[in-house]
Amino acid sequence: MLAVVNRPRLVILDELTQGLDPAARRGVWAAIEELRFAGTTVLLVTHELDEAEELCDRVVAMRAGRVLDSGTPAELVDRYGRSATVSFTLPATLRPETLAGLPGVNSVRVQGGKTTVTGDRAAIAEIGAALLHAGPVPADLSVRVPRLEDALVGLLDAAAGIPDSEPRRNDDELIGATR
Image 1 (cartoon, rainbow, N blue to C red):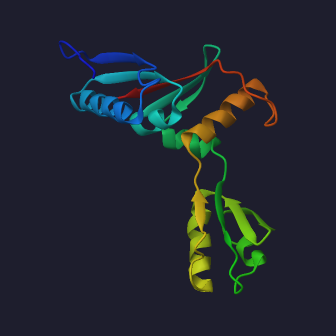
Image 2 (tube, rainbow, N blue to C red):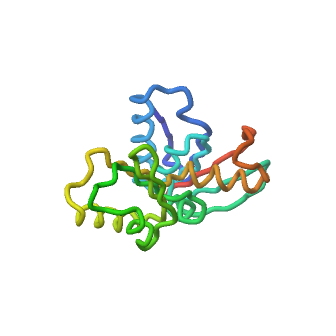
């Protein structure tokens, strides 16, 4: 695990969990949390965005040594995250036009019996309420909420002028700090 001598105020960890199996990775995460609890500031350099979202209080996104933006994981997701997506089989008692008129809904697509609604995170509650009002909640209901990875991919691609269809270069860095 992490052995730290003399209770430092700052620890810098670079790609600490790369190549670890899931159990070992969670053990390292627990050790990082212990450091935080003891008052140590942890500067975490990582490409593992789920790790940054879980462990970091603040995140700095960089490209080619230049800071693009920073903030809490939630702030970056709010600024750059793609829309939330709710998918389900449309109940017979609910019309797509009704869903399209709900607050926060950006689009409604019905294809092959499956309905996909995109919008902001608040739209998820509106869609859920409409589904409850229409009858039993569809068994195939799924919700995808934007995560830090979604936000940073969008931010990094936009900063590089890369269209969604082009492959990304792999020289980006994410630095997270905890306290």
